[in-house]
Length: 206
Image (tube, one colour):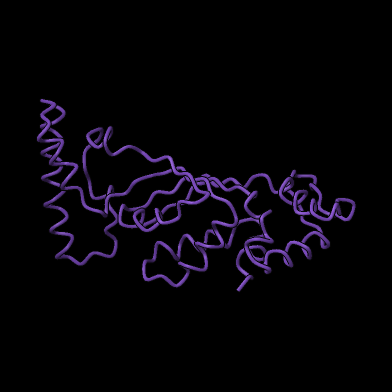
């Protein structure tokens, strides 16, 4: 399971102006804001952008200045893979250390939609133990009960993080993960495809 919410794409106008800095060609820019405040990339700007984007990461530096913010809720086993993308990204997560005891444990806290009945039965037993340990900790603040929760918690536990990325990060993610065996990566790649001008600037480069 993966959920992507509250997506914001920022700084596209500044990125495209900077794209023309090396040749001082700002007068050739034909992008503009429409009546709804949406940034519309003009034909001339898109032609130059695609030329640079397809020339490699050194030439498409302007894509590093198109910023994306999104809230992602995903299981810990997926976050372990996402954490390989450290350069140019920031993630501020909900704290397991501070808030693991804040609410009762239920199946809804876990990505278990692909589990077989045998695995689900095992998960339910783990949830029951986690909830018992949680109640003990809430009542007594016993450190051993907290340790039990932290060390027993399955990697299917869902965590929400607010992530900041840029279009260059998303290029790396898209081509590395679009055929990955985890369905969560497919969902994220479909989300990338729906971002403004991602079809041209991200998804058409290879």
